[in-house]
Length: 160
Image (cartoon, rainbow, N blue to C red; front, side):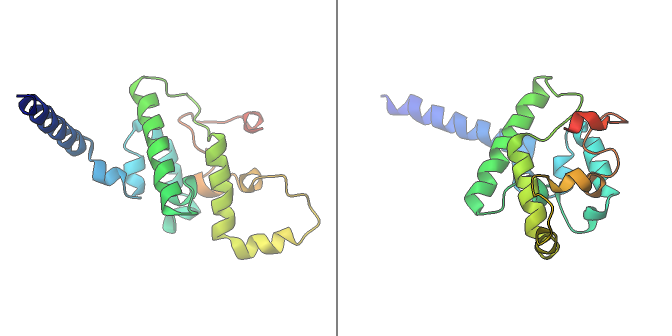
């Protein structure tokens, strides 16, 4: 007697998940295509700036914005940041100026070093202190002069 409602509930949950995966194009979200990251209109400026910046020929968003030490860390961060972004966007809490959080800053810095290891090794042999991030000097490389924002101009004083 108790099996029938349980089977119906499981079947309903499976159908609901299937519809959700189809409607939201979940398989695309598991990939690394930059156009998928630009699905939300708030990312239009970031995508447009990346598309016209030097890194467009060699990178996708996930190459810089997610950790690459192992598959588990990569997909855990992808799921966590993706759910955060969907929540913020769907609840209308998207900030006017989009800024990287501390995890993302750490990942971006690590990925700059990972991809540019030879150049960084040469730089690190110098006498300067290493308390800065790569984008402190190379602000326009990945996203062009506007940076990651939906506003036309940015005040450099807010980067500190």
